[in-house]
Image (cartoon, rainbow, N blue to C red; front, side, top):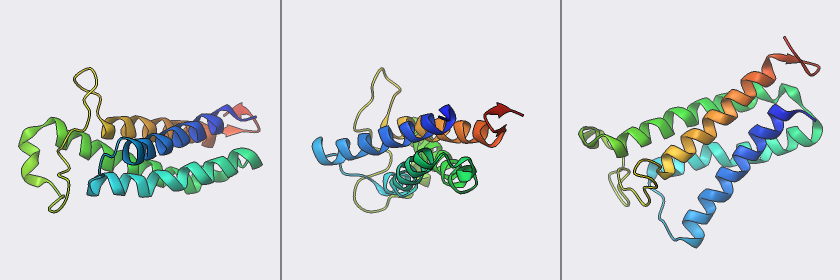
Length: 138
């Protein structure tokens, strides 16, 4: 069992289930940037799960770009919510504004920040996976 692969899959799975919970149970309407983050996260939950089942250590080649792009999008989204000056550069022109905070736990934890953390965990786990050879760190 590869722990890096398991960690990356669990992070993607928790993020996917969390985003579905917020939209389907709590009825939070996703903004444009939230949709982009979902587009990047949902496939990771599937392909990392398959890779974990098959013990496919080469998955980092395919999954890492999704995780890194997701980090960039969710990082920008987090900054957009936390820095009022950036609202003038907001991408969301219709529907829910991207700077809207549906939740703000402890004064700083938002949905995009949780997505950023999940993408970061996935990217770091995949980096560790890429540096291992037959279970030994190179």
